[in-house]
Image (cartoon, rainbow, N blue to C red; front, side, top):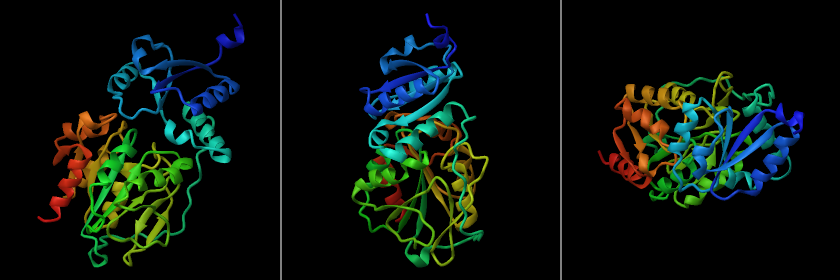
Length: 320
């Protein structure tokens, strides 16, 4: 046995669905970076090496439920890194290399490659009312793993002319932003646009919150950007967006979709305590229901259902 291989740190890779080309590239690059890799499929939970401290879940089949796997890894206090294989399969060139560096950083934060925050305005606006722009209700759509598919199902239920503004906070790394926007825009009912400085907010639109900037909505309806919280644990940070929007707008509501993280619980609590509506995606329709489950336990969810039912709830709430 090669002694050098014995001492190499081990990373577990769980294929959620069929093994994908981007996973093979990742395996090769991780080995070149000094890691040993142990591969598993979703039906091999009992065979997972309990001594492995870091697992990458390579998600390709979004119809599979991961709660049992997540529970097992949490019990062993393992670090969990999610990768959306449908997106990473499409990466090329600089974006592919940046994705790899982000994965390496998540494995070991000594590889410090987090992007620096960009600020184009220090303006702080409070109590902005968007009704004069035709927007009667603002909803923060919070999602993590499994979120894109749920969001598409949700958005396609609208007609596109409702007096609503959606702010999508989807956990992702910065190299995925452009492709995430294109993926979510495939709902074909509510246009999804990246929130950028100087753009005007309009009803019947969804704004994808960027990774490297936080946003504000000025009294003139124009979007501004500001520095991100340097201590944030996720990108983008659901809790931070909720806090900022509650400071910024006169009222905010929140819908929590599929995802695993603690990020979002404080945000939902703030929204709820400030009089906003909070609704959740049902556990049986989630890939991972951890965020929504925490909200349900705290008895803050005013409605719980699959994405299409969540959309219907919001449409009905406009008539009340």
